[in-house]
Structures are given as structure tokens and as C-alpha cells.
Image (tube, rainbow, N blue to C red; front, side, top):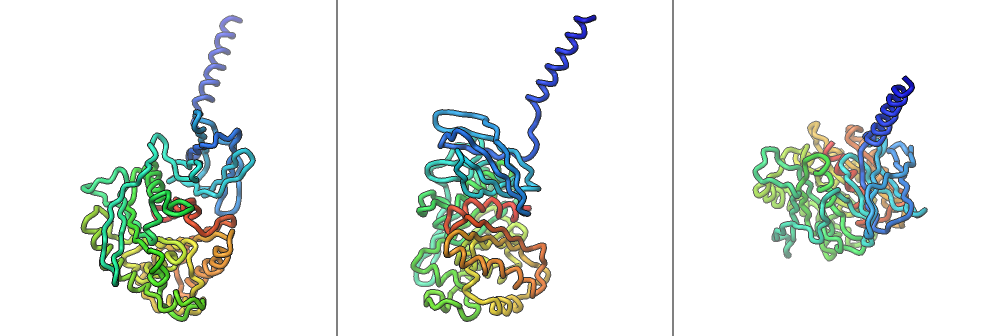
Length: 376
């Protein structure tokens, strides 16, 4: 009898150990690949309500080149994460069920997808259009699984500053990493998106991306008499028809977005307000709303007729350098401006980061959050 009891106890203990070892972790898994091979990595999950949870990620692999960790978290409670490597905090990164992982490397932190080889060169098509007295390049990037004959058409995001979206050496802060973010989204949802980036070279950028809706608040002549309407017309009348004719993309507003940052943020907002029948989602990151005072904005917004077709508006800004600090007041004022025209509150989303600066690195970190807002 004693022997039988011992055997039964052994079976129970082994079963318990096996269950514990094979227990599925709760929450969405986000990988963190650390090329620095830090001795200790800790993660702090952050919710939109400001609540935090500190967890120690599980090490899943290690080599001479890198160490990879798996972080599990509730994406209904948290939307950002800060990894701490050997007591050094990294920047806030988007955390949601569209994110596969983040890759901490010597050239910066970029979205990372499990079992996918990193691309040194991003594939995209280049189409040159005649624009004003010069030529303008438009970059069209399709997801890895793109099927031009698929029955379900692909969501499409039109973006300003296309020259900074894809190549990691695009700026001293890298690129937006949009290809990597879309690949990460495709891995988790089974569906990617087509990204269309319109180049805005520095010589003409200020004029191209400034809507002329009133008197500007700055004394800089580069923003006076902006040609934002011309750029908007170019996008809607030339670029969009070309893309819709040659690519398997959706045309209904729910699956079409416009997004940009800084001057591109204010222009994207303007384009979305001008064409709610075309763009169902607007991404205005670090937008230069302060070029116009609130009275000018309200007057402009009151002139629009939405016919119950109100685009969703995603607003983001940092606070960590002078330019972001100047822009954040205008960003935070825009929801109130929209409220004055009875804009649906549920269609407005705001998120901020005190430690974020005004450059592509931080827009890369938050872009997957915009993707989730667009596709949810």
C-alpha cells in the first residue's frame, strides 16, 4: 500500500511539474531582442490611464550576438512599454496585439518580427509625378504577403514625408520603420497594409504642408500663403487614383488613412477634414497646429460639412525638447476645438510622451499605436 501511495504521489508531482512547465502565459507576447546582451532586462507596462506594472521578461534564446526575451501583457490594460537594460531605461515603445517585438540594436530600436530575417533594403516602388514646376516622388510599399488578386482589398495609408519612412539611414534618427511595423501587424493579424509615402523635400516642404486657412501666428515667411490645398488636391486627384488603379487597395473610408508628423501632421489633419468621404482615419503626430490660433481653427472647422462621416483623429505629441514643447499646447487644444463643432468624442484619441523628442525615432516608436487605432 505504501508503495502504491508513493507511486501515485510521484505521478501527481510529475503531472504538476509538467503542467507548470507547459503552462501557457497569459496576455499578448511581445519579443525584445537585445543586441547589447544586457545582463538584466526588466519591462514596465504602461496603460493609457497611467497605471503601470513592472515585470521581468522571460529569456527565450541567447547567442553571442543577442539575447531575446518574451514579454506577456494585457493589451486591454496597457498600450506602451519601457524596457530597462542594466538599470538604463530605454524609451517608451508601443505595446499592443499588432506588435510582434522590438529590436534593440546599435543602429536604434526597430519593430522586430519572430522568425523573420531583417531586411537591409526595403522594397518599394517609386512613381514620379509632375508637381507644380518640379517632379515629386511617391513611394509605394506593399506588405510581404501582398496578393494583387486577393478578394479582400488591402487597407492603405497615405503619408507625408515619404523620403523618411523606409530606409534606416533616411535621417540621423533613422526612419519611421513603417515597413517593419506593417510586417509586425501582418504577423499578428494576418493582414498588412499598403503604405504610400509622398516625398516632401526640404526646399518646398513648409509651403507644401501648410494649409492656408487664415493668418499664421509665426513671423516666418516660409509658412505664409501656404500651398496645402494644392498638395491636398494633388494627393486626392492624382496619387490616390493612381494607387487605386494599380494596387489592390480598399477605397472605402474605413480602410483609408492619412498620416504625417510636424508640418505633415497639420497637413494630414487638413486633408482629412477636407475629404472625410475618402479618409476615415487621420494621424496627426507632433502636429504644427500652433501655426494658427484656436479661433482660426474653430472658424475653419465650422465651415466643413461632414454629413455624419467624421474621420477618426489620432493625436500624439512629446514634450522632451523645445519644438515638441511648443507643439503640445496646440495638440491638446485641438480636441476642444473639435468639441465646439460637436465632433464625436469617441472619434478623437490622444496620447502623449513626456520623454519624446521631435524626430523620426519617436514617431517610429508610436506608429504601431496609430496602426492599432486605424485598424481596430
